[in-house]
Image (cartoon, rainbow, N blue to C red; front, side, top):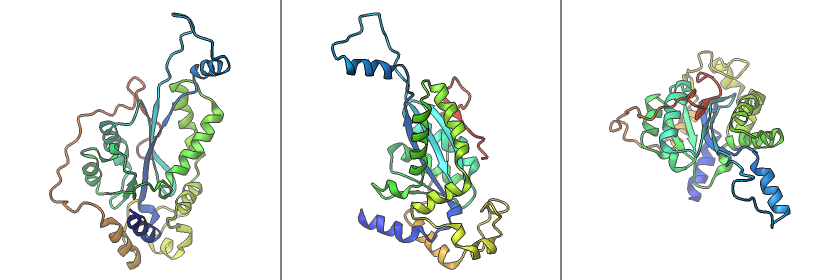
Length: 267
């Protein structure tokens, strides 16, 4: 396990950060009426609600799924209940995949739902690659810093329903500037575009740090190309064997409030 971390850390700084897409999900519970009920019970342990009186509705757990690039947050989604493999695959196919460029490298943890059948095939169908972080290495995923900020802001907002929490998350995403996203990657040990002016000039990166066409991967340095090949060596090599079949699970961003895209998929 230690050697996996060592290899990752050795090569992570040499990969072009524009190719990296970090993915994770977090659960959020609205601060509803149950909070007041729990507080009253804590202050007065002998207090009991009589049958049919003082009933407090259970709060619905929400799952927030999002992807982080070096200059933006993309494909954010809030869904009701825990994250399952079928729902995660549907999000990858219908929300994340349209934002990917050939050669992108997706990075996520080893959660079982992230390894659901069809997830890797859906990513490869977009001509992108999938890497799983070394076990027990959350500090290597810069998206953890995004969730830390969101947690703080949501706690201050004190939204009490699933609808208001979803709307609040959508509005808070506007507070993540491109420079802040780049700093998250740098804090986690990944390369900074600002530290490589020659790379910016060679590939014609604009002031916002993006390729003019958003997709070009030509002109990579020999060192970067070797690093990318080394870190991608962990990926399964049976490319000729996999077969992509779209899942039957429907990702419905507008259906009954169950799942909601917070930004356009092309964002």
